[in-house]
Length: 465
Image (cartoon, helix red, strand yellow):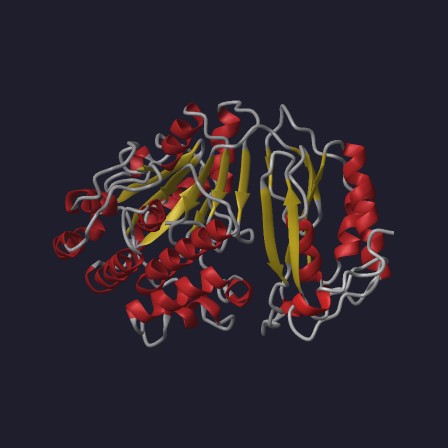
């Protein structure tokens, strides 16, 4: 009754003013603008003017081609299942919804609860949610070692206290043709790093790094050439790390396997992308031009298993219990493998072009020292654990990079130290899944509990330098 009729002076001071006395559609010739008043009893007045957000321009791209991650959480298991069931029903009732929009909205719509579900959807979001409710048991949250599921099945879990995460950067042998196609399409930070690395290195054996990364028809033997593999693995790993950071996933520590330590130094902040990719490219070029051809093989055993063959062959890496890599000339490796196989020891040749971490790389050392002198090393923002010395924050001096080239990779010892110091989540940043088995072997031997081993790539049997 106090608003009827409208005060006459409003027509003079506020033409067009109308008082809304019932619900109606809000329309305007331009952006919607609202004023919000707050009048305090103590005399404090506040006024806010709100304007409608600008219309978002539809982004070009490949929404229909890219899988999307959905994360859903709740305060209890029953509430989580109810939320998943409701979302699945909603998606089925509205088939025109864009899957990317649904995932983005749900991922940011609520605070994280302790009971969580994660699903990778590729045009089948409702099915993935249904699978989580019907087919997959709820994961226990204690007394178990668990790893990422190889497929796209949804995963139910109960959150622990904040994990201490280690990013692991793999060495040569992890690469595979077309390894970055999906990421390049859907992950802008990864694409930016690959493009920048390509411009920094220029053509490598006649092709850009981006071509080597994206072409599924690439000959695996050509991709394994060290001139290509070294800078490509650095670009790939750094690109993944930056994309994960863009999504809010960061590391508490980093470690790298062989050439992966160059990528790890960049992820840690000790080397710029230009220096890391440039140094890896020069390292690969020097090895390709100066080092004698050689071979490497994985041996199911310890250092004692291969002790009698040392001299003609070298221990290139000790990745964990029962996981040794040997390196040497083609003839020496063949003879060692023949004898080991005769004794019933499992062996496997690795897809590499040279005998890394062996004296066969000595012709490379002088020019490699010169290349390392040009690096500007900065204090890293993220702790880096050396897989050469087993020490935190190595100096990354020219002398260090020479030892790094010829000394064995002590990856297993590095994982042991990380476990001893409370790190419980290991994420491999590479195109394959070459380091997870070694981490699990160390975890199993130490009977460690509540350790998660994950990979951003597909399962690989290629081995590693």
